[in-house]
Length: 262
Image (cartoon, rainbow, N blue to C red; front, side):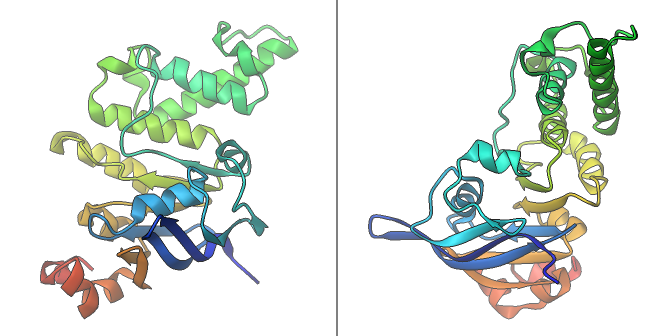
């Protein structure tokens, strides 16, 4: 039985004479906590753009839940269960966390443009019940991502760590089967990192996660499997202990200091 939820096979992306993604093959297993690492210029961002539909591959294929999605638009991949966050957050500055999450939850519940209606009505009508379901879902997400105390503040006024938490909350509100976390702790001040790291560690077990990250503390605490990308190609894959002990990895990227992290 195939337990893969996301896979790519012999994936190549060329820009003119430059090969940015060089024959990449890997699988993300159901419920995975999988990290993609590599030095700057290794091709991580290009690979994520290929997986999520920002770029089309030159050759090779991508499968999500057993279906070829190599040529699907980005929104179609989201509808099929693949959601990502970004290195630089993509938030509505003037909306509050509650408004932002309500908009996303309404969309997932088929309420569409009704997201701005007053939330929380307990009247026994279908609309009120729909709004109650939105309110309940938002309350769960706000609690889970430690945003309740700031839920009515404009996003532009939030500490950066809270903005990162909101971005992941938005992704989870889309009910993903596969979640791609693109450097979630990048730019987060040291004093705000612990809350973010704990929240990431507590993400639902049934969501398969691919983490793209430079922070090796996070990678080795979070991941049960690691893929190392170098010059657009897969150098090696394995468990954190295998990766930490691999002389090829030490030579090109990680260095001997990682021996104590596995």
